[in-house]
Length: 351
Ligand code: GDP
Image 1 (cartoon, rainbow, N blue to C red):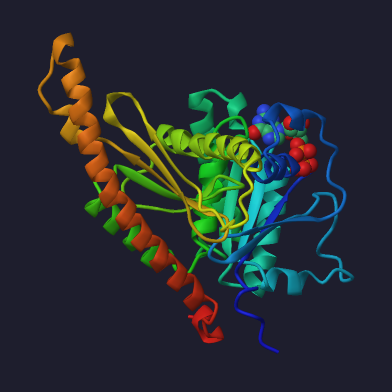
Image 2 (spheres, rainbow, N blue to C red):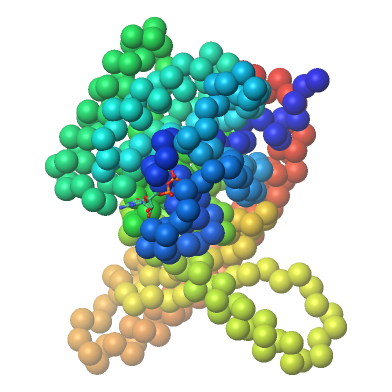
């Protein structure tokens, strides 16, 4: 029996020793828990799974560290052959030699069962380390992992490393990159976003999973963490305002309710605009638009201020019309891509 293509390569397995931070990561990223509240989390004792859907249905499975998955009674072979990425969490504030031994044992097994598996290592809890020490820890962990794999005859295996913490956006950035590797449509998506940027005077655009704030794609310009933060927070603000609006809306007797499509535009100082539009399947597009035209208009003293403001909004109205139009085209293309991706033949996963 061939597996359903939508089930393969879409699961992320989260592993690591006890107290490494696995449950905290899931709670913060997928359940909006405040990082400090994870202090009181009970340690995981049974496997848990988080679901979220983007262009493909992804699930993150967390395995508690203390169970032994290499016992014959556990069907670990089937498990590893059906997952797309193994994410191993290492507590960088703790003695990590045991974790590295455990990691290479798992890599050896996972790679044998499923050579196409992505192996991702989170060097976690880096908030407690000084800048210098972070680099040292990363170098040391990469070196030792490389040595262990060499000993096992697995020097060809690709392993990616990320410095992460739940107290800043590094955990979202890492998960975004891990998830993106599992989306077969990524190159076309990036292409479409690059096109959008070029034709709409957009500075940076993200396609977000609204619930987790993981971005499943962005245009090819480099990601600046501050821009990411502003765009991610704009999602929460928009949703909060929308909830308010919906409550007031109930007062009117409006029976012709259509499914609403969330769209929100915020004019920042200096002529920049934040733009959000709901896409499909829990995704939202968020763009930062820098208004270069408005900034270069004359008006260096206060008397010109009103005039400058008016010109600003004229320019913004014009460019917003274009942006609305282009983003609608993008959304249609995204829908077509999604419909198409449901009928991907099984063979295309095996290339
Ligand atoms: P698990 O056993 O791997 O699921 O680990 P937990 O999620 O229970 O986390 C163990 C402890 O690590 C908790 O007290 C968390 O608050 C703490 N922790 C998790 N992530 C971080 C982090 O990024 N930085 C710091 N400083 N502590 C963290």
